[in-house]
Structures are given as structure tokens and as C-alpha cells.
Length: 81
Image (tube, rainbow, N blue to C red; front, side):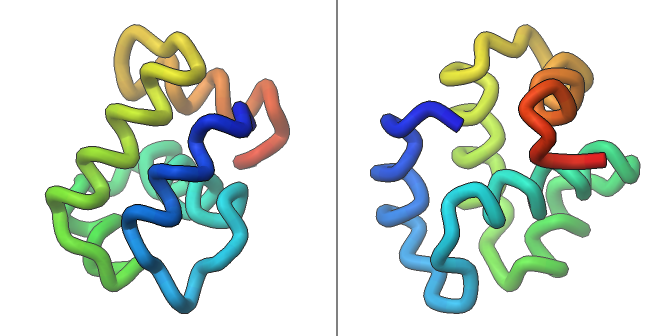
């Protein structure tokens, strides 16, 4: 994962998820499993806005055109199954 994403996860202040890769994995796996942003937010104890921001930032940094492409990129980096 690009190092520049660290600021995003620090900004989100997730005490239970301190590993940046773990947050990307949780969000990415949720997308890969077909979950909605609302469902991902519920699983992670985050607001929908925070999940949306994280997805947008992941898409930007990984060069993904859409959420489907984001899942492909996260798989390529072995962050999700």
C-alpha cells in the first residue's frame, strides 16, 4: 500500500484497527464480498462518510477507476482474497 495513505487512517482515528493494511483489507474485503458502504461501516464501527472517504482515497492512490477495479488492485497487492 502506498505510504501516503497513512495520513488517511490516522485521520480516521480507528483505535481498534491500528494497522493501515488491516483497514484497507477490511474495507476491500467488504467490497469484494458485495457489501454496501453502510454494511461495511457497520462491521467496522465507522461512519458511512469515513468508509466512503477511505474508499475514495484508496481508489485514488491505487489508480482504480471504480470500486470493482479497486477490488482487483487490492487483490493484486494481496490485501484481500
